[in-house]
Length: 318
Image (cartoon, rainbow, N blue to C red; front, side, top):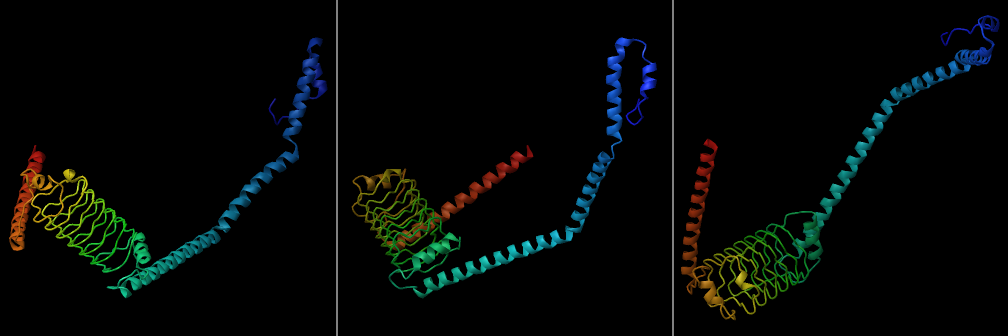
């Protein structure tokens, strides 16, 4: 019998019983068939099935009808985000404008004049400080780590305890600047003018001072570990109690004429052919020598580049 077929009557079922002991099982089967039939044809269950289908249909209709509204909400949210971003950008520009005003108004003047906060805010927002003029400024504890300060004018600035680790100060002017206890670890001072600057107890470890002018600079108690002084002018510099000078990375062609208070063996060590420092009393002769060495180094670099290029092409052909 199928689920939808009506069960046989009790009379018809009873006539088919041949053994009395089967009665109990036949009765159970009869009850099961009747129950199954009634459940199958119960209108309430059909009603529930219809309600389920109707619910799904209504949900689909509401989804389709609400699509436009959801799209408008998404667009409005996007516009709000853009407006907020625009406001934040305008606020940032206004803040930068005010910071530059503070710096420019105080240019060339002694004292702080709010420049410390202005400089740190600009640097925090990754604004380039290339060519900035903060000469004579009093800015102790200034934090410009990793700052871009190429061609900056820091002449006579007081930067005691400043953090300028990894800062780029190529071609910068720091004549007579005070950098006592300053952190210049891995700073780049390529061709910078540091004449007469004070680096007392400063950390110059791994600093690049190639071609830098350190004439008359005070390097008392400075840490020079792994610093590079190639072609630097150290004439008249005070080297009292300098630290880790034997760990200087490069001092080749540096002029150490008239250095003061240097460690006992420093001059002998520096002028050893292995280190290559030189002594020139005449400034013009020193400049001429430096120019010649720069040409040699440039020519050597170009030849090295050409050799590497030829080797690379040969390897590609193979």
